[in-house]
Length: 494
Ligand code: NAP
Image 1 (cartoon, rainbow, N blue to C red):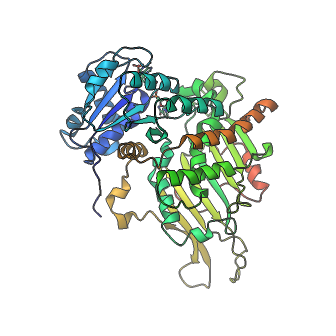
Image 2 (cartoon, rainbow, N blue to C red):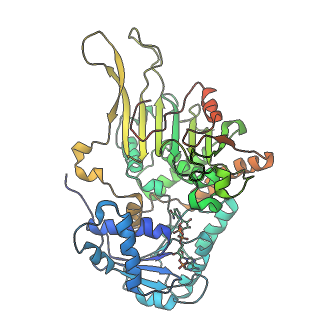
């Protein structure tokens, strides 16, 4: 199959925080990969902006290093990197002062092309940058702004951020990134659900027993201890990434694949979430690894021996609507787990009756497993007859729905989430970005849960580093007669 790279219209992209970690690890290498794929127009411009004093050459050197380190296999043919670097320039700009803004304006083409401003800086600077872009006449009705997580730490701060941005930009200009939505498989999930007649009739509480969403990391808090301890797994992962995944699984089919139609349906899901009972939540903090110096326990890592912030959370969540009443969603995310793995598993109900002898009722289950990382892919566990003589023996086998062989080599190296999302910004497609009301609704559901822990003085349970979370998380499932799926990087069966 021939790769279908559709070039975008030409653009100027300004990256505020263009020297920061995110810009160096994700945004710039992602742009480079799109450049290698031939998607970036020849006269497009990328302008890095930050407070550091440097000229274009010094900035290009920083970017070249980042591209070499983080762009995977794409430090491709001779001359490609040089071609990419030519598109780059640098503006010394202070978000909180007047320095550099007029120079930045001069650097922009201002010829009616698409203009995008990526706010890859702390959220506390969004308002300052927006205000100065406005004051210096750089905000046009068609320009776009991209903002990163965290989008607030509660409903009130999210509202304030939304209000700040709304003073300068229309909602149609604001692209709130959740990079989970940019993953190939997440979009494939929508294709599988809404592009086939097969699944939708079964996609409800009559046929689906429960759904598990797991996002497991092997790393600890690393150097982000101070930041992480103010946030925790609920704010850092559940309120945004896991919530977005839940929305895509649970939403009604939108009338069309259009940004607001999709986001309207996601919003309805968030609003249908029931308040979570305290005994349906398990919070944990990881203990030290075998090598305590290299892998200290959570509290040591964040430098607070009395920290009550969770590095793990498991919860049972219910949706109060016709489609899902009676089908629980089990969410789980944590650091220092046994493997790096993000997976959504849709576990169908057992057969109502089995006609086969020697098959214990309820053992054969169809499971649709959507693996998001590290190996993206979708498998469907189906029951078949074990080949060969010896009577009717049944086994479950995973049906691989990635279809790599049929689709050719490019499916093995799909664009990274950031690449795809940045190109969507340039195309003006907001489907995979969170709308302001979605973010606020997610916080409105999250806030009382966190407030409950604080009021009760809830202390997270310790869990083994390199394991699967506190034993209480297993008990949460066991009470419903269930078990968590194994956390593994490999695709496998239930
Ligand atoms: P970072 O490494 O600390 O970089 C911050 C960038 O902002 C630097 O380029 C810095 O350069 C610039 N900056 C700081 N103060 C400024 C000011 N007053 N005016 C202009 N530029 C200023 O942060 P990061 O990790 O890249 O994160 C950026 C944003 O992305 C944050 O909101 C973060 O939460 C979010 N995010 C990051 C990641 C990640 O993996 N890193 C993932 C998800 C979300 P100067 O100091 O030279 O000005």
